[in-house]
Image (cartoon, rainbow, N blue to C red; front, side, top):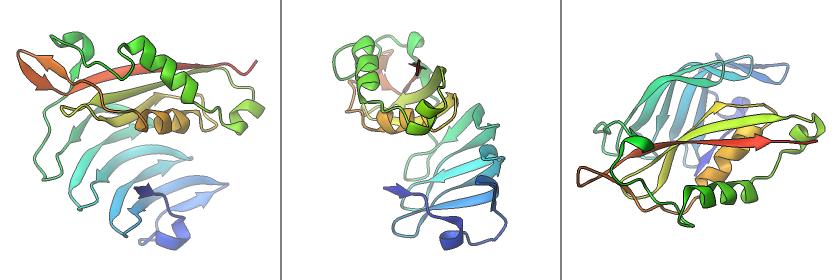
Length: 193
């Protein structure tokens, strides 16, 4: 399990700082066992610049660039042994799309909405809008590589990421007779009024 620690407890290089409660500079995050889980830059509280995420065994999991809190371009992904993963195919480009628990993507979206808890600060701010995430259904059916690519703030994106991490395994996608990694996009409309 990945745990985000306070900078004063685990921040080893001293370059990151919290300014007006917004993260700024280079930050490191660690697993409970002390192993580095992620490192990257923040600007005004948003991920901005190069980021690297690691498996608990210390191997690089993925690397890429954020700009103003959103993913820019494609992340490079790796298996726990260090070998690169082949890029995920878009769901519309596979012979047989992955099948989520519940039997359909509509059922999955309903499950996400039912398990989503609107953060109190978002409710108080009366935010409206759409949170948009991408995720990959791996060859073993697990949901991985969750990225929030559109957010309305106030913890709404983090909550969508939390719910997607709870997903049970899917039936994997197939293309040209082979099991493949498949990328999905899921929008969640937020209405507080």
